[in-house]
Image 1 (cartoon, chains in turn brown, purple):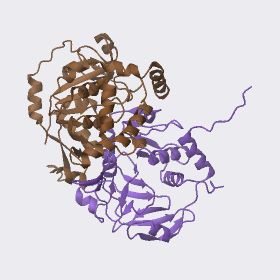
Image 2 (tube, chains in turn blue, yellow):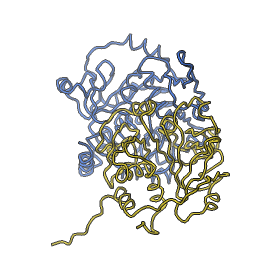
Image 3 (tube, helix red, strand yellow):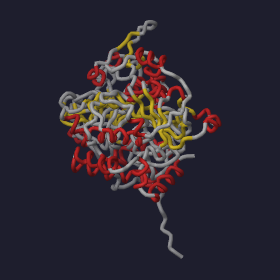
Image 4 (tube, one colour):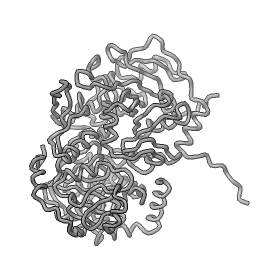
Length: 316
Length: 261
């Protein structure tokens, strides 16, 4: 079903080094770790804590034949489709967000058969990453039973050897690469997150290569001051990228709200022009900038300050 | 006093649905009308109702006028008692903690199955919809499922094109045969009616009518042969208080004009 079995993924992690080395690099250097045909899992959910600096670096590279998985996917998937990078989406929901209606570029590619959409339930996505993270080939669950989702994916069931109960056997997913955006990381890859965690920890622990961008690179002492906030230890992380506003125009819990005007403009253009609008968006917002910081700066200090104030009002 | 004739279909649905939620229970709500109805219930009849959102949020408070459009954003987490991971939320549901799962539906059939995946066939979709999100899990795992949606023939179909989220599947003991050992669709709330499922066949059944609506009107707007309960009642209209609370939640606190000095 996927490139890598859970045992092969384990063997790789067994063999890999666990040195606490300086793993800092640029987003472009990190994106170069992704190869054509890879399965890339994108952290966060919908428009929350999306690793946008890393996604933009990936868009810049114009990879081909990628599969992308996400708990709920937003318009970053449309950008990857419109630039010809994506063959397959694995998710439970693909849209821009409820107020913006159906995603037109996604519809174009999937309805014409140019891209495949494997639709799992939301819990099944979580259990797929969790099984991958646990090093087991599947997890039993009551999700998806009896539904056409299960039929379309040929989801198998398993009978409990103790009780005889029939359960869905949700298969492990070990992505080739996981892209995660976090609040803080040290240079070794100890990673901290504030607020809700989405599926990021399981997604990262399941993945063969883990790239983390962070709002701030901090000292190991600062990590040690709040160890309860640490989501990933250094030995589960392969690359660390400094990316202030690294989820923009999506939100980052406690830091900045989503730039809904930016989405609105994108959604309106996509509705009018379809895939051409996605490509134009990438040319204007990715290709035209030297790096992600330059794209963020183009939003202007007033808008960024307003988004930060928004987060301040909503979080403790 | 009632809200009068200016009550919108959405207000009518949300307020009717809010009355199905009892105090000291836990509701797993989707965004939009289910969340609004849950918030209205907390402000009226069920002050101890715990609202859970799939983004990992338990005990959401909601800031009037700033309701979330995603279950994963800070607006959804406002005032929460607990933030956890998404998978964890669904595992609470699988464990049996959530009394109500509360969903909207693009298409629902006579056995309460919901389609939010595709119009046409999955292989050759006429319209590929965004997909399940957490809806399949909510309808598979929560103790009782409530559905709120507008009453239109194209939404109320005999059989959905695609079962994204299981109701009673083919009816009768269809859920048990599929291995769905828990949970059941309980009620459907629309702008015309309150419906439930007849216990033997698990077919949708009319139980209550919104004020001024007739059985014939409901049948006309339903795309299958609807069962009609023996004791169909007229639902009481939204009160002025319920409408005021709904509007404050949706739009924010009413602003009182203050003259400049």
